[in-house]
Amino acid sequence: MFLIIVFCQLSIAHCTLPIDCFLSLSPMSSTVRVRFAPSPTGGLHLGGVRTVLYNYLFAKQHGGDFIVRIEDTDQNRYAAGAEEYIFDCLKWAGLEPDESPYHGGEFGPYRQSERKAIYRRYAEQLVNDGHAYYAFDSTEDLEKMRLDHKTEQNPAPQYDNSIRMKMRNSLTLDADEVKILLDAGTNHVIRIRIPEHETLSFTDMIRGEVSFDTAVVDDKVLLKADGMPTYHLAVVVDDYLMKISHAFRGEEWLPSAPVHILLWKYLFGLENMPQWAHFPLILGPNGKLSKRDGAKYRFPVFAMNWTDPKTGELTEGFKEKGFLPGAFINLLALLGWNDGTDQEIFTKEELIEKFSIEKVHSGGAKFDYEKAKWFNHEYIKMTDPEALLEIYKDLLPSYFNNKDDAYKTAVFSLVKDRCHDITDLAEQSSFFFNTPETWDLSAVMPKWNEEKKNFFVDWANKLMELVGWDAQILEQSFKELATEKNIKPGELQLPLRIMLVGGKFGPPVFSIADLLGTKETIARINNALPIF
Ligand code: GLU
Image (tube, rainbow, N blue to C red; front, side):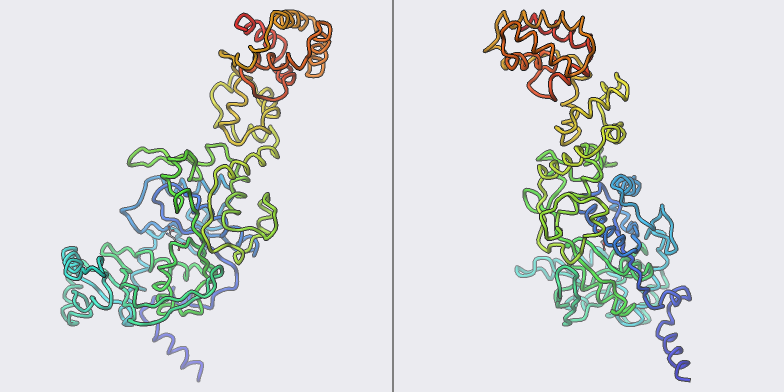
């Protein structure tokens, strides 16, 4: 008998909800389910990928699921191609979700624009329960309100508890009038009714207890005039319906927390609220790292190249700069976290094992591009030349195509330890594909003389008859002839490098000659000698 009464009460309390919602009112499962919820408005910023990474690591560590939900309810900010681009970035970084619009899953649809019908029911439930209201104010009404209430202390008045009773809404109009307006399809929004003085708190997994006074919170719009939810309503409803256990997001969302706490309280019960963590900002040279910093200081801030569909402006990505996915996620992991030791290089598996949300710092994490390049350098060194060739295939300058893969791989194995990114790789290897056209003579001239010139004429002739061709044989023949001519071999090696490379850089000079081969080595010496 008692059970029946309880059941009836539950049914009455939620009577505005359809049957599918009853089903999802079952207790939250204990499985870890985390989500990344991007709005497809442009390129994927470092901070966004770090949010993905921390979510991903946490999910994998706990044998849970990582969900990507597309928050595309703001049609004005929508950028064509941005959604596909986000998934391309995640694929490149090796952070593929378990559920998403592209990966499927039993909690779909995973695009908020396809869930429009769901949100209105919840917004209306809030109105019926007295926690929200219809607001019919026009743009002019709102503009007038801002002008009328603007003071020196309050330059941007908000639609809040001090204002709401002076506006056109279902709290100030009588019920019949509201019904007439709604029946006539009058433009309206639904706003949350923020309680006047309530202290709201939650325990952030990084920051500990965080409290807010609702006095400073405005009556945020929950449902817009076009019927689309705002972020505030959609994020709470979807985190609930998708059974999200932990919601991790950037610290810029912290001020929205009181609105979300109230929505959880009113709609689903605070006991069902996911555990939250707000990640620190990523700082650039002047405060929060921005796209402008990237353009100004010439470093990437997006995961992959992004071209703005409206302006055609290209913003560079880490991928196209030649960052290896492993290096990229390693450097991102350490932007705001470390395991308490000096270890800096972590494989993805190690990160999954060692990462902990509680050890993420609450203060901003400074991005240093030189350090980022250091990580990439370490990963390039650890990667086989064959694998590098595969990764860089599409990024290499066109002159690479003049040679076959075996040659390119041999070049990579010689130069990779000197490279931090694709620019280094192109610079360090271009002379293997192109005969130098300029020579750094300043490096040679002060100690240059006829004897040395003759040495090279003779050595070039000797090379034609050399039996066998490798770095060791070349070095031996070079040193023998130098000794014969009474010249220190050390004084001849730099000129040889300048003849073969054009400048004072590159791997060991006899390895270069070895790879260039007999014909090309001799041709380069003969080509340079008249200028020397
Ligand atoms: N759509 C929000 C964003 O673009 C998601 C924030 C959240 O994770 O709750 O950042």
